[in-house]
Length: 637
Image 1 (tube, rainbow, N blue to C red):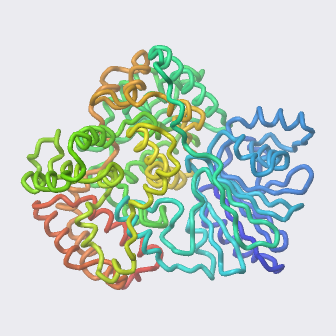
Image 2: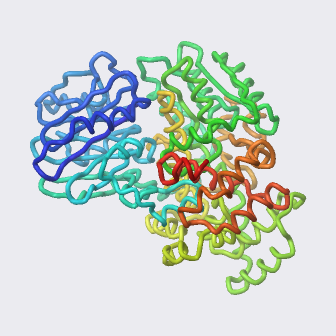
Image 3: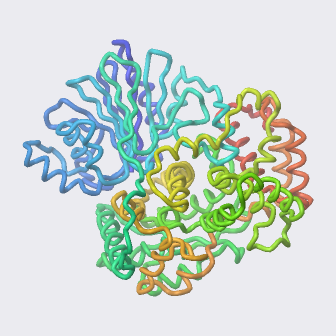
């Protein structure tokens, strides 16, 4: 795992070498082992290395054997050995044993289509000295990040993290107001937007090509999750066996490493499955690690121990105090732009624990997206059945009336979700799923911003992101649709962003076998009723794992990986919440309605409302604005 950065001037003037080194230095945490730059006239490439494969000779930036192309690469390509053999048969020469050189020679052999042959996680940039073109690619699911910007008409720059682009003296830091609206809906800023209007993320499964003589990058998709071709009347037993075989293979190819390797073990289904199959592939005990909280409802360590004992792993466990909120400001610096997933705190801690013994960790991330494991998947499908029974013209008045008479209170039966369910039932499927996903309910979202800010949004709605993605959906059933939307938004924008920054903060590489694109492509063809069966999410996945994992691990209620923020805001974080959200620091931005902020804080602290998700989003927004200089230290004091 590494960090990359680079610049290309559109004029003949050479790149600023000092600036290139400065950008590279901001990425030191991503690659503390080595750092180098390549500079040639108007082009500069920079690389920070975390040595994993070919430690002796895999330094970057790497020039190919013919001296006509240069690459900087972040990630791992797991099929590099077979690709190398194919390229050698075509006459290509190699100077190293690294996967990096395979990518470079694949470019020379197959051009932009070479990215389609790569199996792995990656973001890389190639400077083709012959054609004077810059080619950049990001992996299919967005496991590895890539930011880019155009500085007027004079320069193009890119980097693994936004903080490296902060080094650019000409960077326009005007806030993207639509991105702010997105953030207070999703809790993160979805691709391709960033917090700045002038900076974009390269979307997952896309390439960027900057040709000689052009200052307009060509951005093209090369892959999209497909749900077409569902298995017809499959033999479920055979399907379960094939599932395990395919997942085992995806794990096996991710065990290649010249440094210590291990796995996260939370006690949930996905991480437990990863550890169980790893144990059968390794000739040494698997290094596993987990963390828990000193609050029982947030602690899964008991189940992690069951799996560890069954597979005799070399297990490390750490309990984190329930008031572990000291990371708030540090997280704002790690993520560079507003990020409101509070599970970033335990993710950071478990990466910290893992790094004490290993440099590479396998993770179970992606299982909920691939096999429909979230509670919201179950609720959405239940609501879809109700929607089909009630004619569209009367849905809104009927369910609005029921919602008003059945407010969402702590005592409301869990099987109805009370007011939230009725609010969702008033909407069509797409808007209902956005309602379920939103960190801030629509009625609060409308009043959160000042009238002038809402006017500047000019009718923009974050649901437009879903609408745009739906145009590319090729499946047939409503469950596959929301899985697809998760894979296009929540997975890269939240889950994978969270893990990348938290792990890289500790110079730890995380590999995600459940998001192997070949495994995912096969899994997407499994019929929806085998993924979500009745109230049981991940049905076929759990059935396939029954010979491998304890029943309690497979079939207990899903716990998640969260922290008690609602309790924090009524206790030890109460005064910090007031000072950060209410006492003036946000007001110079002229974004938020002060009365709405006061109401949210007051209702939550008094216990007459539950607004912890909205307040956390506000607090992390303030912290991010302060870290990036949008709010001065004096204003935030």
